[in-house]
Length: 289
Image (cartoon, rainbow, N blue to C red; front, top):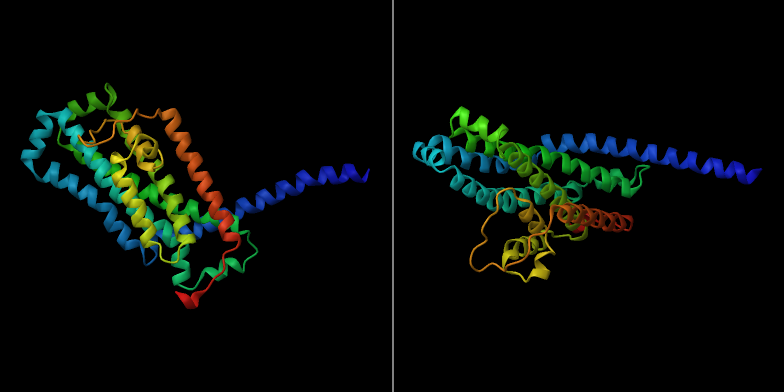
């Protein structure tokens, strides 16, 4: 009889734990998102996220000749935007923006000498990792999706209304826009996990971040096997408009979206799992900062 009671009690206890953890994640999420958007470090990321939109505004709206060129050569304009998207938005804005947001999730708390408040709470540290990560993900996805959408807006602004409607709703335009947004979100997911991991593991995260940056930028020169050990490779293969990597690039078979997306998600889960293991043994030492 007692064994039946114990067996019945285990699922109930497990459900209570999961419910508690979920409420704690949501509470952390609310606090951290507010801090990410309105904290003292938020202004820099706003300015950074506005750069690609400003560039597209100057190229398409402010310059009449460029706008006319886009109207005359729409296919060429799409290829130019694909290069701007990968070089300026993905490899620069999303990369460094995620570095700033996610590395500060824990490093910022250490610098502000406030991380111990979380550690003194009745809170599992794995739950803290989950709440912090999702807060950074919400912030980065909102900001950088708006950046991508704003950049696309000015690209389409240069064309007349009927041509845009036909391309968006009777052609591949809407699908391409959604794919650009999807690639941006996947970039935030992957880079966010990497930079939160770096922020936890390294007292000075700048050097590891620069090493990752160099690896991602030089990805087109790497052998096929090493190319796949990067985030940008999978994002590049998901881009709606193929981009020429140049004559020096190593030729590699494009990875199927059915492999790219799960691979990125599995990689993210593994990195977060390592961060959760790391934080169990993390000790705060404000004096060394």
